[in-house]
Picture: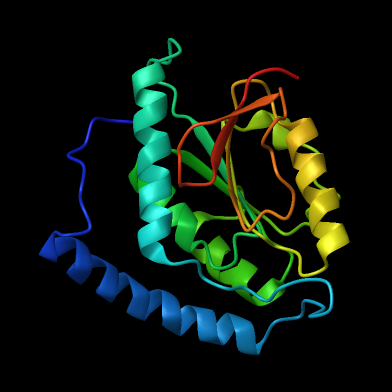
Length: 199
């Protein structure tokens, strides 16, 4: 369940220490996942861990935004999916902020790490295009899972169409723009976060 938290700023020494420790562990598992990747490097990226400070800032913002919006949610955690979740590092942050987390990852080695962290019921070994239930989630997160520009743009459009109204999109590394799209409103000036307002 989402809860009010003290906002941490990048100037805090604890913040820097915290992320240095996290980055060491994420880096270790990332190297292992990349070395054994079965993704096609022409069209798909191997697992690449996003900067943990950015992940934290994005998820903290969305958590606080949803908490302020309320939407009559009492006792039910908001659902969060990371598309191309790799080893599950983003999901760890989201879970700590009170989200009910799920991940989608088709590359077997990082998927196995994520399954060990979260269980088979929350990590799906599936291709991003064959998955059909994006509309079930309150928050959708991704960090450009596809290396091929046309495939990535197709993926972006598919996710945006399938999202439910009110759903929040954290879209790192987008090729296409949502500016001027009447279905979405940008929630932050610098963070890549939007909310779908109509379908």
